[in-house]
Image (cartoon, rainbow, N blue to C red; front, top):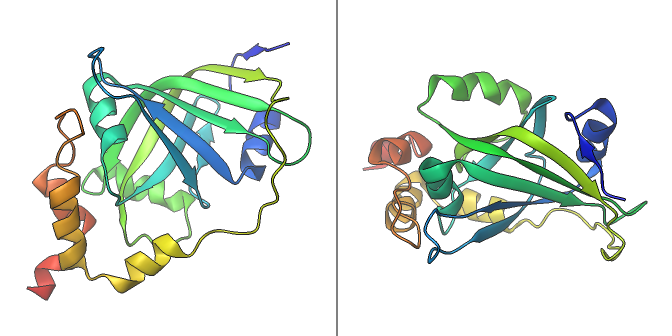
Length: 196
């Protein structure tokens, strides 16, 4: 039977730390808008406290999550166990975008020991509801490791080209909502100015 929890307790936080994949879903306010669901991997998700999750948001081919959060803050993170006992957790709440030019960004980075090149922002979720469900329908999968694709891309492109990609693909959502500002794009690619 599904349960609703008061917070992200120690047991749930430990379970979160063992998962290799999570999904983020957001939607615009308009009924005609496109719902977005993105898979996320890597060692990017952190439990800040019993009501806050955060993860690193890398430069990508779209900006749906950021645009939707800025419009209405609604967000859910869903995780399911692919190994061990079946379990699904959903964390509903209000999202916030912490850009690289935001003073809070550097403080939040203390939770990571990673190469941050290619990170465009940190997404925080103020968790309002924690619930679980059985996960009986989720198949078992064996974790083989992280794909090298993202890091290969980041290592293979200079900041000038990364900035051009962000300008072309991250200024607005598929529905035309505001995405990254010019200032945020510049902060995410600080070396681009040195390369011109």
